[in-house]
Structure formats: C-alpha cells, structure tokens
Length: 448
Image 1: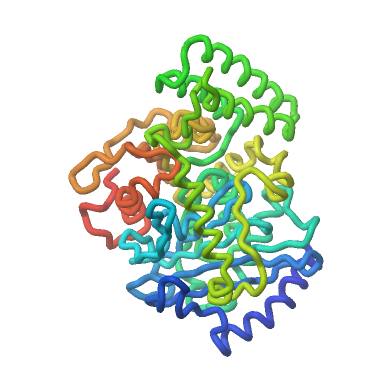
Image 2: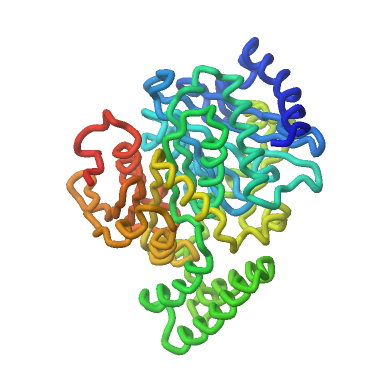
C-alpha cells in the first residue's frame, strides 16, 4: 500500500468506524419482503479511496450459534465475473440465511436451512469496485489482481476496525469461477500483512491457468456427446489459435477470441445447439437470468437500499461485461493466481482447497481444473500428481471424490456443474465442516 493510499484509507475509515461503534449504524434489523432478521447482521459501505470516491459494500452475518472470538470460523465469500456481485452467493447460492427463490416468474425471500451461517461467520464483499453496490467514479476500476487485493484488504481491514470482536477469528477465503483469481490474491495479501488469522482458501470451479484449461474444453464437450468429430476438429483448431495468442502475450485479444470460441462451440445449431454449458445437466439455464432480474428489483428498491445502508447507490450485476470486465480484460487469461497459490502452499501454513462440479463444460471444467492444479510448482507437486481419488461420502452416499497431497485438496462433486452450492448444498456444507470445523459430526467429516 502506498503511503498516500494508506493515509486516505485511514482518514476515510475513522468516521465510519466511530459511527458504527457509537450507533451500530450498519446493523440490519429487518429486510423488506422478509421482516425482522434473526441474529447479528451488518451491511454498509467502507470508503477505501478518496480520489475516485471508492467504496466497498459488505454484508456480514454472524454464526447462528454466536461468535466466539478467536474460534468461530470467519468465511469470506466472493463471486467472480469479473463484474458479478458477491450477493449472488449470499442470496442465491445457499450461503446466506435468507434465499431469494423463484416461483415461476415471481420471487420471494425465504429462510434458508442450508446456510453456511449456522456455525460460521460469513461476509460477502462486492468486489472489485463497480460490482454490486461497490462504487467507483469513472476511471477507478482496477486493472490487476495486485490492485484488487490491496483494495479488498483495505475494505476487510475497515470492517475489522468497526467490529473488533471478529479480528482474531480463523479466516477462510472462499469463492468461485473468476474468484479463482480473487481468492488466492486476497489470501496472499492477508498473509503478507500478517495482521489477521488466515487458515486457508476454498475455491469452486476456479480459473487458474487458462493456457492449460482452454484446451480441455473441446475434449470435454466431445466426451459428453455435445459435439461430433467434425466440430471437435474445428474446435481444436480454434483453441489452438486461442493458446497461441496467450503464449504471444496478446492477452486482451486472446480473452475475446477464446471466449467467443467457447460460445461458438456450445451455442449454435451446427455445434452444441445452445446448451447451458455451465451445467450440462440442466435443460435450461435461463432460471439464473430470471433470478438476477429478481435480485436487482429487490436490491434496488428504496426500502432495501435503506435497510442495507447504501444510500442512493444502485446495485449492478455484470458477468464478463461492462467497465469492470473491460478493465480486467488483459488479466483474464493470465496464470498469476496459480503462482500465488504456489507461494501460499510453499509456506506450509495454509489449506488450499479446490472443488469442482463435474457437469461444468466451461473453461472451469473439472478436467482443466485438475490439470491446472497438477501444474502448480510447489514442494508437494509430485505427490499430488500421484495421489489417488478417494470417495467423499455424505449421508451414506458418494457425493464425489477427493485427491490430496499435504495441504492441497481437490474435490470433484457429482450431479452438479458450475453452481455447486445451488445444486448440492448439503455436500458443500459437509466439505466445509470437514475442513474448517474440528468439532464437526463424524459422519460429516472428510476422512483422508
């Protein structure tokens, strides 16, 4: 952090911290369409940069069992995009205690019995600025993971300054998809600062090494019966051009070309006939579009914005479109996050947990994830490559498989794709319990 940036963050945060401690100004007591909330919840904005008036939005839920300082696991959640709001996970992916459910074209807020917050503190921060309720003036969008992690840490540190009772709790940085870039970098920043109690990362269907992951897409689609021999050959040629562009350092151009190739492979009647390639087990993925519209309607209502303490800011949800994605276009195909993961592994301190739904046919498919993890250069690399899958059993059924070397674990979940917490929430909770909660029930533990 530059001295000027640090001064700005410190001076901007003082007023917010004082207001919170004196008046609990960020406490959520009730939500429109739902009513009074149970337990302790906070939401609001933390200023992180004065030049562009940057603010990060957070929504925190304390564990239903209460918080024990230094003991209760503190889970950070991030969605990807880039440009997606992390409230997607909180409201739509069974992470928060309240879920937005669709009933045809209508929606309702309902209590969620599968929430991660039964035993764990959970915070979702819209990241980076320009996503969700997090705000920046024009020109303030981040362009690198290094910028992102510094700003995220400023927001997280600001939250801890407001709520000191959580500062010593064990922290797990979690996320999915493009979060495969965000999560390791935020964890690395926490590690470097040495001020918080980092325990590890949990990444779902992540992006690590596009140069390795892109070539697995035609193979995956062919083996799933989505494309024929002719399209397979064409797809391999196109992906070959994609990887040549990445190797040549044409990052921005490669991102556009490579993603267009994926859309072509799955999207036309001559190829994949419009399959929802984020989960090939779903006949129609448009439900997620309807859910996003419903989230926007609720979050942008005047009553909800008041309850969440965001003033006049509007909630924005984008996925690989808009100014946030445009600013990160050159970052999309880099393997910087895998380098950071290697550095975290080399410390020998942190759990690096990766999971993947096997019906995901995108860049984040399980074949590419496995190959990308195999390629991480660290002292346990050979042992991880040689390790065998072991069944991951939940409630007497095989929910998937897990492979491990030391602190690196890779779960593959059956009967789901990209949106694992939506489709198999019980299995995800079992994984989390086995990893972060030493007091988990024996049948919920991961025995490796």
